[in-house]
Amino acid sequence: MAESLNGIGIAVVQITSIPDKAQAITRALDQAADRADIVLITGGLGPTRDDITKNVLADYFGGKLIRNEEALSIIKNSWFAWSRIE
Image (cartoon, rainbow, N blue to C red; front, side):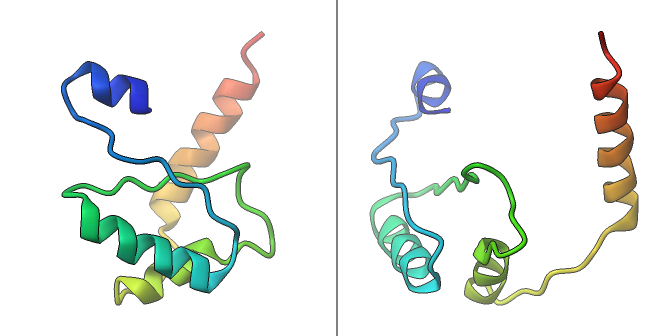
């Protein structure tokens, strides 16, 4: 991602990896907001049953998580179509 952003003239200031701990996530967000105009957040190895990231992000930004059945259906259909490609 950094390579693509740099390639279009968006300077990547820092890349940070953090543990799956609420305090570490909120601290990293606070620090990133202090030093950058744009903060991009990506996942690690993928969601796990004990992953707290999405809940911490919802709390941090004052939102709540909702399940969007239409979006879920689109993702499932895309996944099934992709997984059948030989």
